[in-house]
Length: 176
Image 1 (cartoon, rainbow, N blue to C red):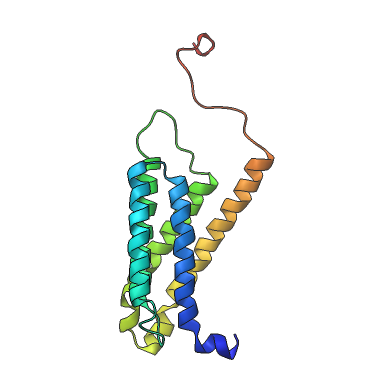
Image 2: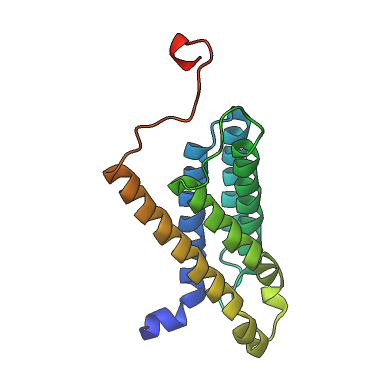
C-alpha cells in the first residue's frame, strides 16, 4: 500500500462502504419483487446516505463502526426479507442452487459474522482491533468463496440450461 493509502485508509474504507451499500441495495431492489420491500429499500438507502454524510467524515483516524453497523443491520434485514419471501410455503419447490440464492446466502453469512465486531470496533484498543479483525477477514474469504461458486453455477446453468420442469399442471390432460 502506498503512503497515501496508509495515511487515508479509513477514508478509503468509508468510501468503500458507500459503494458496497449502493451496489447491494440495488441488487436487493432488483431481486425482491414485493413493492413494500422495494419502498423500504429506498427509505433505508436515504437514511443510510443521510447518516453517512453526517458521520462519515467524523472519524478519520480509526474505523467508523457506526456506518458499518448501520449498513450491516440494513443488509441483514434485506437478506432475511429475501429468504422469507423465497422460502414461504408454496406449491412449487424452492431451488437453493441458484446464483442469486447463493449470493444472498453469502451476504447473510458475512453480515451475521461481522455485525457485533462492527458494533464494538470503536471501543477496542488497537491491539484488540488487530486481534479480532481476523473475524472480518475469515468472513470475507467465506463470502467470496460462495460468490465464486455462485458465478461458476451461473456460467454452468447458462451453458447447460435445464429444459425439464418440475411443475405439474393438473388441468392439462397430458398431466393426468
